[in-house]
Length: 207
Image 1 (cartoon, helix red, strand yellow):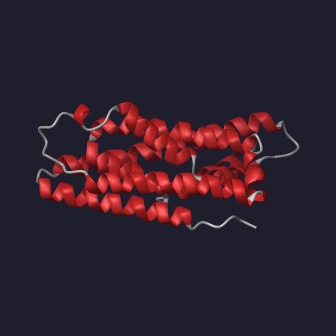
Image 2 (tube, one colour; image 1 turned 180 degrees about the vertical axis):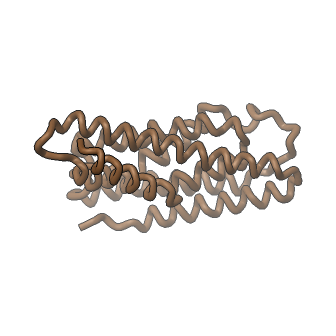
């Protein structure tokens, strides 16, 4: 792969990842709620979720979803309902102050599962890899090596992006001590997650 092509891909992926979507909304809301210890499991869930979506795309599921309205709708509603569930749960959560131990809120595994499910079940993510990656592959060179490089680049950037968003959000939490303010932040995050769920539910399959 030519260096110029890889740099163009790097810039394109960076811009795409910086724009907040359902995954980043989830990461930020959970990091604000649970603090710095949530950064690693949230970022790990995002990476594995993207890897799953990428693998499914390369196996042909993205093309099938583009052609099958039923399959696209199934993934869409599963993802939308899960986002709504998380949003409602976060909205109803009542922060009690800094003295409550982290493990009483949620385990690292729970945070990992949340970010993984939201990322992996986003139907647009699966379709995205089918439409996006091939544009940067040179058909005159071995495809497998190029795909590995492009996919690995995406996963590294996705991990860094999610971790930076989570770190920033966790610092916001640590700077806020008042329970009323943290409750307000929970409700803002819950509303954003529910909004992301409604947007996901309203997504239309690409023609």
